[in-house]
Image (cartoon, rainbow, N blue to C red; front, top):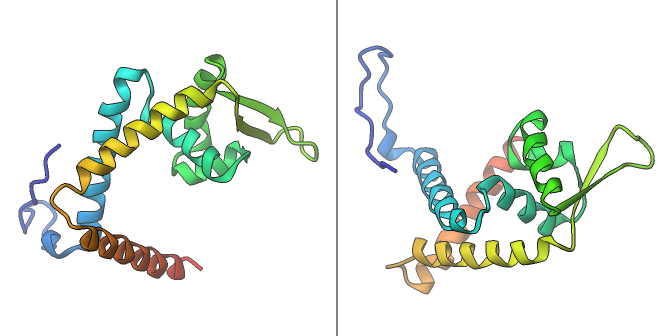
Length: 159
């Protein structure tokens, strides 16, 4: 994954943008690099990044509707269906209809997902450790505090 900063001026677009000064640019690049590294770590175990996300959200929040899960994963519900179909086929999740609205599908992790989740956690810990190589404990704490502040600022904008 390349972290090359784009040229300051695009001949086709005109206006200059100072990418190197953009917090968002660096957060997106770091996020993409982190996801790529995690995907590579998960691949030998037969786990996709999307499956990791599904299990992660279910671990954090418990049972979720397909719509809520897609929203948290920042993908369209229709895109999520294929991921969930494969996970259900492999016995990793259960889908049930909501009691109040039979059209609403609820997703939960199945007992068979426990071993897969353990592999995800192991892979995630490896990538987390790799990501902070060269940083002190104090720097990591400050970095997380900074990210929480940025997140809070952006959450405040969206109401």
